[in-house]
Length: 370
Ligand code: FES
Image 1 (cartoon, rainbow, N blue to C red):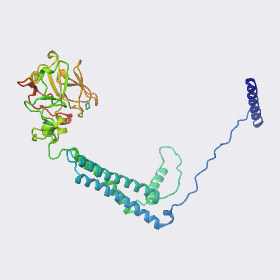
Image 2 (cartoon, helix red, strand yellow):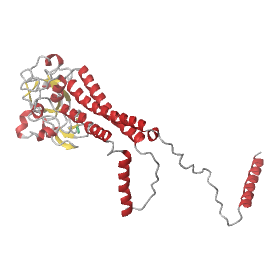
Image 3 (spheres, rainbow, N blue to C red):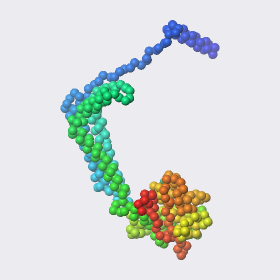
């Protein structure tokens, strides 16, 4: 069978060769004709707006109505921002705020987009043109031709002529960024100096250091060399927080804000490994040091402690801080050391703060405003 197939295959090759010889004599190139013919452009069909001025007028109304809807959407988003403010801790208020501001912005963007596309499809000139390739730079004649194209485009699109459509489009485009600008207001605290806010936390003289999240106070004797604790002020729990006044809350209005500012990392090193500045020697207790857990780059929690090197690592952008050298930055984008919390012990042996931090916690932006 194999021999047979081989023979038949060989016959086919011979047949094909003999066929080529029939078609083209030796020394002549064989050029096969294109299997697919260029179909060219389909016949041009005029739109109803080209044939009927009444219909063109109607579509014009549709277009500027869409642009007006876009303006309404933008203004609606601004109004929603004002009438559905985010109330701290109110989930429903946050939902309504997000819903209505989002709906307004979506309507503004959608309407201006659909309006622009519809204007182009229904009203602008509808003819096909072929632009041949040409060398760069263009000569005078070509540049003049390009300028003519703009002039003709202007006439055909009706940008100058259809003033209602043009002005409503410009209005929609001007109004569209307003919600975005309005939302920026939400980034600044209401009626409070942001520098003052960042400067103060819940830590006060004598406040016990407690485990996060249980709130159990920590005794100095429990902190062994090499260990690290995630720490909060003792009164930072949902029950006590309700009864604190504004000053005791460190200027924060709600529990999460207060916690975000006051969180601390506590570590114990061998006393001989601590290279402390003379003026800060009293800020630690028997090799135990406490630093803000809020990264001075953009505020992520610096939560990874490497016991052997005494390095703290921020997982967000890999800033590293050396705990043995007052948490100075040894790598990464952070620009200043983590603020240190001065600590000591009370008469029962519990670790307590000597005072609040001596500088603002968090990103370096606040430090520059000090
Ligand atoms: S937030 Fe810590 S390195 Fe960027």
